[in-house]
Image (cartoon, rainbow, N blue to C red):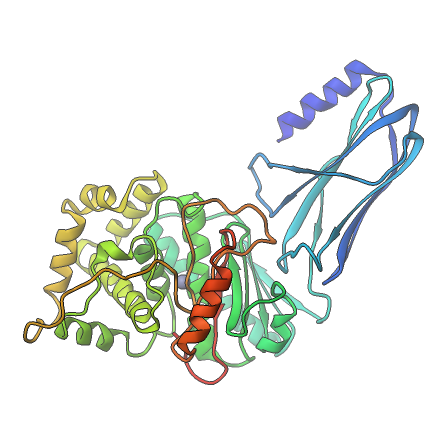
Length: 430
Ligand SMILES: [Zn+2]
């Protein structure tokens, strides 16, 4: 990045005597309306080209991939240029940083490029407080300073446990914005989001928004460490949902929670007795959309991850993460790290559970591939392209099946990149 700018700077001096003088270079963000970028510049030679370049997220050390947008301006020696991102039409997630710069080309070939600047897109409806430590920023507007500290402590505790498991630290910043109720949060979700959506996580941008009533320690201990796990694992494997099986990602996320999901252990044991366990292989790319099978998928995933950790040691988790980072399949990763096939691992884990009674129904693969749970994620096969394009949906046990189907039908077309966090207002949700 620095090298790039230096080269461009050198070109500018080599090609012409005087770059344009920038008298104004500002961005103004209005939540729910727009972000306006404005530039004023003077040049001895008339400006003949203006380019506005922007990128999302804070990615220190990365070469940013800028998108070029068409700015509004008139040619001349003194120009005013602007670009408006209408966020009521093109959604932006709360807390996203927009990095941007302008490039001007004059008639005499002089190139002027402004240094990269950034603007934060914030939900200005509320008076946010924030606390940061070790790259994690928590933001809240309801509740006192102690609640903010509780949020941060929960995130830091979750980070500690994850860093032990992945065998290293992560550097990219993460921002967790906590609304105090779903009504407030809805204004920060994309238009037409389903009623049951309780939050949004963007691992690619290091962002989580969620709704937790101030003081609800149980929900805090469930949501924050779980979602943080997805962000950290995304950073640690450094890929866009490429090579990590869902059972591993979700299993670690559930295992990382401070507040365990009550009933998961019993659910797995009951499924074992009834011969209804889902083959591990079937949990690699998606969880089933049927609510009960989806819940069982989370419970099984946690159980398998805990089994691997207790049987083969925490270092086996670290090695699996390294394998997934290298982009191999779960077959290869498990064979390499645990020295047995995925199916053997599945059988060994099943042997720790109660035996099936009677013949039981035959095991069957999930009959569809849509995700289905409060934390469920959609396709891990394509890179997220735009913060405005969410890609996944989820639901919970309290949600009627027709809502699931309607939601899945409606959202299945949307592009990859978002994890929806589902919440029910009344009871623990799965
Ligand atoms: Zn999850």
